[in-house]
Image (cartoon, rainbow, N blue to C red; front, side, top):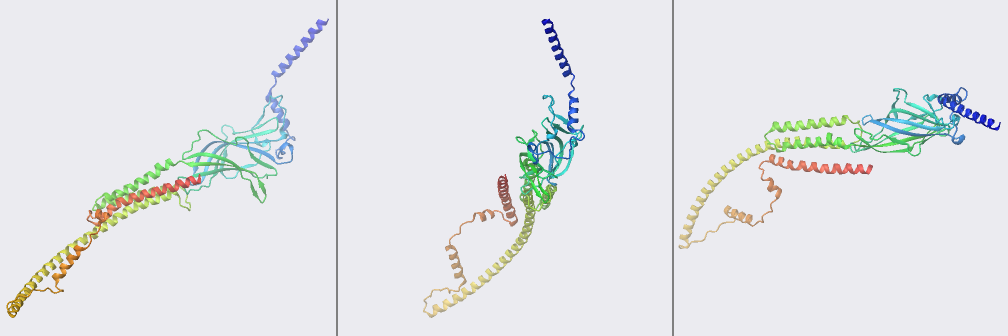
Length: 463
């Protein structure tokens, strides 16, 4: 008997175990999720209009922790001063009304796709210009409810945000673009936003921007006070550095080439008027077109940018080369007129000198004849003794010899190197061209030294 009872007991226990295993195998956890959702979100059981309680069920403000994942930054527009970003935005908070039984850890979380089923923070992006959700193929949004009442909200959105820029150092500048998130209706007495601890902002690897580099980002708080109360606010500052290589190739090197081409006119003959005029006008128009194209891609700000200084000075050099030819042309024409007048004056002086020499010769003959007659008379009166001739102080021949002696007695002046070098070029117009060949490159090189040292130093200061 004892053994029979023992056998039936073992058989009954085995049947119970097999039945329980069969029941577990037939459990549909999706049905369990539906029942749990009906229990916690059923009619009359949960009101999405009421905010959750504070930490540990207190009456304090609800705490919402935020983190974002930057997927891409499509453009940074200097003209409209805005940038476009696509990101995954996440919020997490605790709502004790949503606690449920996880069936011994088998229900890790419940997933919802309708945000209006639970209470949601009224967060908005304060510097947003445009924005839209992504609905392909299904709305890119989900809500996860965990057994302890924690709620995770995640959504993918694209935003166009305002980014006020300071372009004084353009294109050697750095820009800080912010992303601001704040509560619209709940004050800090009811709702507080905090950055998620650890890693509040993530950026996709190999983020590509056409003309910028994302150097770093900083998270901060920006609570604002208005006449209706104080509102919680979060912000992240994205520091962008402009890639200078693009502007070096597209702007700076072409401008330098145009300025150097304008100097070619200094080496052309001053008589080649069509060549020098066409070269000067062409470079001037090209430089003006380059400047207008640069300004078309920038907003009309009231201050002077670094690129304005560069293009303005380059345009001045090209215009100066054109004015230099006008000065050379004027000097050549005035020099030819002066040379003709000089030749006529020389001819006139020669005629005057010839006439003066003839008059002096006739006067000298008359003086000699008179002197001979006087000497003869004195010789007769003096009993045959001759007196020496004495030249009077006012005699022109004596004055000429005295001047010659004074000239020879003056100390010789030291030769001036510049004057000696310029004396090799006979005309004034040629001298202007030669001086321009040296002056223009030297002044332009000095400008480059001052320009780059100034703006690069200011860039380091700003950094």
